[in-house]
Length: 494
Image: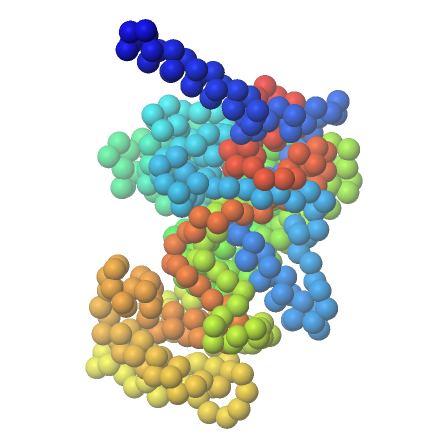
């Protein structure tokens, strides 16, 4: 046999063998897994906890059990769902994903590259499940606790080569024609940072029939029509305040979710509602366990609104809760406490890392340009975090902890930006050094550790209840989530 013919014969055999292996293994989202019931979902909820992995869900439960139930178990609503699966999250071009790639995976059912929004790796636009719902006559709502043009919400209505094109994304939002957008605001609606400004997106929205509301009373009394609403107070990155910093004057995530249900349910053909708990991720980037826990609880309270709706419409409602990735490498267990956990100490923290940095430390630095005195920090440590410099108890600082705080204080007062790749970066990330050291010490005393200021690659939990929920049991990729949802909605597969 000639060499070429021999090669072709071997190659042919390998191809047949490969085909047999694929047939045996089945596709990533096997046909047998998809919902084939007669009844199709009319009301579809997709909740995405950004940065919310298993540790974040567990930490919130332990915290609630210690603080609210006197030590008895207090389950999150999402953890009581009958269907519980495990979902992988890697991006097309990186193992540890980002919110844009993960959002696109969950919205469009494809793997794409880091920072890509609603497009495949070749930058071809791909339809989202939200757009499919719209095209089939359903009402569509998008809610987020971060800016509404941020990566995760944008993946459901925008198609852009990078998540950083905030202006272009805001124009895509208006052109989507979705019925309800709510939560955080817009980063660049007028195109000041764009190379190709297309006008004022908010004015375009008004011309497209949207009402734009930021007043809480007006929001609560709104009864019908297309709506874009965001909280009047957006303290960082056009996002809602952290749950720990929220006041009764703010519109919170639960209220935005409830209004979405009220408005979208007026559509006789049903609705698709995506709600993102975006600031869970931001708190975990900063290793602030208390803020992450409080935002996870706020996210779960939003889920409870969907559960109450499900109780009234159990035959044609499905609720899915998932995360786009874990963030921070959160662990329930710290070397310094061995097997001990004391989550009750976390209740001493009064505000988020962001609020402490912006309102307490920034003012202190302005008032003390000469460098200040670490002794001034003692009452602040006590009042805002419950940490004591003397006495007895779990919150009394050890000598080495005081030394670490003093070093961080000096770094803060110097004001030098911490550079990636340095020892200081491992200690403080890109955040205010003193704030980071305070929250790290409080977290460690509770028995919580962190490994990163970024995302991690661990699988996350996906939960479901309602019509067709069983297909969310098992182990699958995040691209399978929208495929499963589409099958329950009765639409043509993605």
